[in-house]
Length: 317
Image 1 (cartoon, rainbow, N blue to C red):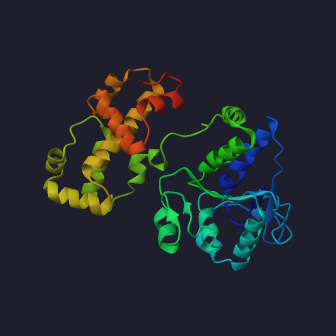
Image 2: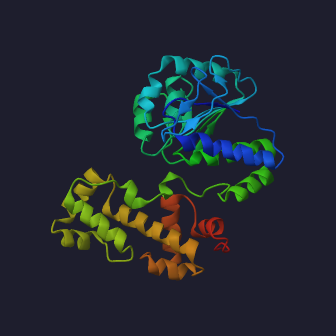
């Protein structure tokens, strides 16, 4: 396992996968992880934490190894470092497989390693990756994407998901399950990046009216949030509110309401043993069937699968 590091690299992008491989070794794995920097010197991560480095990139040999390229907040600087990209390109050509974590996908793309391939990155960066590198097919919702010998993962903690997938491929599902259990993480998350906080992902709308409507919806998911009611509360027409939502949030009021209700249902599924009909009513979705359809649209999973993975309560049929 050869991990590319550099000043400003995001710490968890590095340590998350390393921890997975270390725990896998406790279960019989034989991973050997080495950190390589451009000049062979220790680097300082984005947190200010110093990372000990084993060797320089130029002296590294990745034949038969997995090359891991973490990301960092200043990915623009990373992709402008021609020497770093040359070494990533060289080492990837030697390696058995190449993986990126979060914004590390930009380095792979800048090195030409994602041309004609499907890839992912943090959901906030997906549009920028697609615009800068039009030869890359960007999947903005996937937790990780494997396309041939190249695997890319989404934001930060998804490096753990990616590493678990590699352990499963190398050592089998049972070992990967034991590693996940030891680390108290999920072997495979249901849904995609869209499962993260709806209100946070909507951002801080510029228009105060939109902010108030967003906050009102998230504070009471089960409330009456029809377009007519929302517009009346805001003192504008339904058409005008829809246009504001499109400009500020990138979706419709109805779609946002559905996402908020699904997120509220997720929390209840994880924290309670209430049946689906009770949960559906509590979050404003009315019936188990409506709840299931909403989960499928928003998270590409079902309430039962979510509950089974996150709380251990038996799935719905």
